[in-house]
Length: 409
Image 1: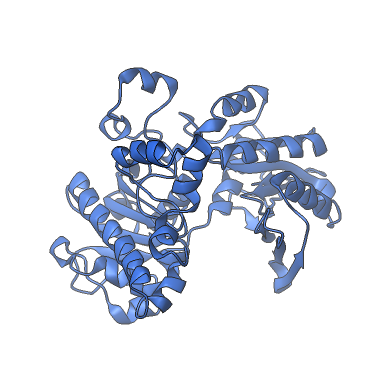
Image 2: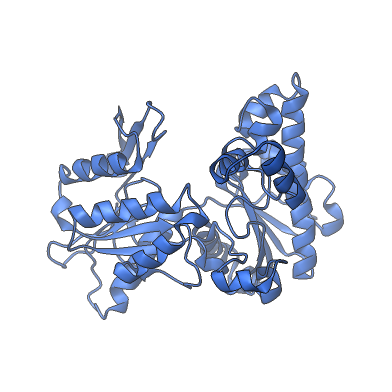
């Protein structure tokens, strides 16, 4: 939840974890006073999780002031920014729900559940693909018959909300001129991707048509030889659902290590388990390879940014990734790296290496505010807003606007 203004102020945040596992947990932190709640709930699916969240919100002080809801939506097709959700947009999203069967149907269900419970509230879609909407043509097309592109099959790129926030923060910290130089953003968590940015715009990115492509990830395979796909479909007699499960839930670090999708677990095991060591080595190798490739695309490199749970908190991974990249001008101050400092580049390094926390929820809140002000609301105070990002509550408020609130999500 945010007190919404041109720069929204976070009031509370939280999430619902392990949905459908039988061990669902609801966590929320109230920023003022740092009060925390942590409880087990029943949420076998996204619908039940959303119903629980709505019920919880209605019992909170000021819940009657919620006026807008913001949603993180994985696919935005060619939408270049946030968009108010209406029946036409919902119909558009339903048409492409099969693009990411693990994500889009659930995101649509969450929107529709809030619509049933809050029919008068404005909901805003914040697309994870919008940051990459202006990818150069050569970085967007796929080498398959052109007729498929007319059905929407091309490279989109993801983690756009995270990358948008990183660029805003980078401009604040090093200035607009330097941030508009040659930048590589490295978002590392269970889902990982890199993006090459020049003059503030994405010019290439590791994920493609879906978030399954690019780097090896926690349980995702990343890029896979099409020949392997054909062979497995035939040899293992896999259907579409089985194959989707294989590459999205059984692959990646988990598939290679056969023990864990968690990079920190694997680091603890690597000395005794060669499978864990290989998984970690492949993860770092692929990131290093992408950094080299994107430096070529950019024509050099000025700034390298690490973000995400792994990127922000795993100095040994950052060190292994950057090892041997001194020929690109990348060098780390290992003491600052161990401290997870904001600046970790060596004083003699030509490339600035930064560690910046990613905050998608704040970007969603700002997008909701943007839609509010765009409608000609000159009053500098916005109603409460909720940010629903993968089942996480957030909100926004502007004083002097009566009893209206915003949910950004």
